[in-house]
Image (cartoon, rainbow, N blue to C red):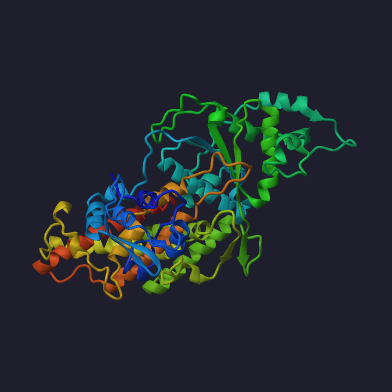
Amino acid sequence: MRLGVEETLGALNAALGPGGPVWFKETRARHLRVRDFLAPRRALQARFGDDQVPERVVHAIVGLQGPGVAPVLSCAPTPAGLALQLRRSAVFERVLGAVAAYAAPTVPAAPGPRVVLHCPALCGSPCALRLSQLRAVLVADHLARALHAHRVSVRLVPAVRDPHMPTFLQQLRVDWPAASERAATEALRSRALAELTPARNAEALPPGALGRVCLKELVDERGRTTGYDPNLDSCLVTEDLLAVLAELQQAVQDWAEDSSLGLAAAPDAGADSCMVVHVVSCEEEFQQQKLDLLWWKLDDQAPLRQKHLVCGPVKVAGAPGTLTAPEYYELRHAQVCKASALKHGRDLAQDPAWMEIFRVLSVATIKFEMLSTAPQSQLLLALADSSISTKGTKSGTFVMYNCARLATLFESYKCSMEQGLYPTFPPVSSLDFSLLHDEHPSPPQGEWLLLFNSVLPFPDLLGHTAALPCTAPGLHITARTEMVCKFLVQLSMDFSSYYNRVHILGEPRPHLFGQMFARLQLLRAVREVLHTGLAMLGLPPLSHI
């Protein structure tokens, strides 16, 4: 079984006896020189009074064992609290001996819940897509990938109908289905016609509108306590609205086998066994609330669990608020091409291979900008050229640059090995990870930092990204779609710092090979984690920039 940060924290807290969690994992380099976990002094005083932690408890902590629990080297009182350090060589050996287990999400024993992800922004054309709607699209796509990775069966609605939208989504590396045929709306139309309220003052209806349906009763019945807008009173029913409802209805009623994962629908497949998550921009939320209530009004089998993941507004510094999603992409793409021409001293825009790299860098820039902030928060975009620099440490370009540095490192090793400078990579079981002993030098070289902050906690991070509060009360839910981007940025910063300090491929001397191979195996793990994180964003790894 793989070691886990959450399993270790759970065992440490249990060893202290009844009470809330006390221990936390250290992340900063200066703290990791002396400890890996800390139980703060004040928290311990609240638990044990002014007395010291009983010696028997400290002994129990040092001897901790269990599934997923990392081996403990020492546990001692310090002015900051109870400090614990792991047996780092043993942790290196366990983790780097099973890299695949840490570079992939933890797969549950049974399939997870069924989720319908509905993104109404995809009903229109690309040229009408506002930046706030683009943000909702990217959040929905990222969330779908995270859920799929955890064996959650997901249906994506609506299937796009605009002929230009599939090409634009492909450009953005968003994986979303295209429509083949419309879902039947006859039953919903008949029910809607029966529910129509008389026209007020001979109200003229727009083309495609059937009339208005009163929603006030539903708002009073279930809306006020759950977060629906109390001002909702009626909904104008149109053919387009019925088409959206029909597609949602079909996604719930006819839950097909997910061919991409080989998962069949659950035995209890029905309206109550799934959750519908509407991923909407803040401007679309009021209309979406109408759609929810209308679905309940017209369909007795509508799911009881409908949740709204509302994305905050997108503000653009120094630019008009009318910038569309395609214009935003073209701007970033032009900036990437310009930056590359300055870096390489020539225009590479006519080279097909480089053009594909430029497209990937443009999308990486956009996705890291849009997804690095919690979705419910306001997002402020800066459109200056500096946003796509490889020198800045917060951008998607910086992450892709370090991905390419890793690829170059392993390609250099391969070429040197083929020339006879280095031996072939030995079996991982023969590597001596005690040679990764950088925890005490000042400044530390960063090997433990990379393993402890990046490789070891990665499966837990993916789990948090895919976690949806299915049973939480209320209409609105949150999602942690910012976690992967923030993690990859921090990983890239730590790797870049390490790469700049440490000469990985040293002189071809036999007595240096042991440490070199141990370091290469660590960076193999970093590379695999980075590639998996990028895949969660729909981004391929790059070999050069």
